[in-house]
Length: 376
Image (cartoon, rainbow, N blue to C red):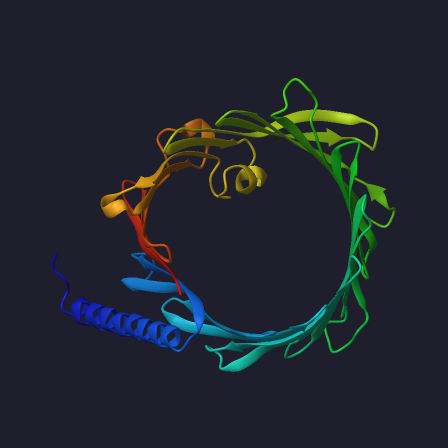
């Protein structure tokens, strides 16, 4: 492959800079490990996505622990550049804890956020207070959780509605989780300073047939307040799952309701099916509405996906996993597929993993990436 005379030196300089950065990170990692620190390094090297031949993204976390004390530093990297640093110190004594953390924006060279948090737990009641200080405003989050046996109550309040240095009311979320005759049910509601009551959501998981214990249906409905009249627009979502051994089928549906007691129509919005065998698996996912792509397919840009995978031992008894996925924007047009992706991951040791990802689109390689995960 030949490079233009002006492109080749640029490529060499960028590759040399990236190599120095990675080398410096590795020296830092081994140095902290030798000093008795623990940590984790997750990095992704992407080739052919932007103007640079290679870009690095990821984070490096360093943790020091002593009796009752934890100090952690997390370095964030974006586009091969150090983007931000999070430092957190926490101490916990019996049932009371306190933490202090700050975020440094390395690009703008300024402190972005300062956080103070304290928490306490006693006799099934947990209380948490979180104060976030920014350059132009502050947030205060208060939370109380209570376990009453048959039900659990979670109350979260946020102060700072005026987006300045104030403690006026902004938002209140209340959720209650319980089990009624063996059926888990959750109720959650929200109030805000701007609109007052905004919505209430009810979610339950039921097993309709005792002869099919592997079948479950999750029902979710939300009543939302709109306009000054306080009208309600209820939407009912249902999700059903059925399992037979290593096979499963999931059905997503949406029920339009004219009012609280009147059903306007029923619509199937997505389906997924999975099967597994000794060292492999297969998955098929179809979404019939763009708003459901993310939940059903896992990617908001695509309406259908087909996947195959293998997990087992490779050379020298190292764990190897292989995944192949094909995506289509419109389910009715698949195949052909709009994008395909192949991922090969190798666990070199129990704490070191590398993975290679290659994506194809429009008949050519769209992106190549190398992922590295290291723990010590």
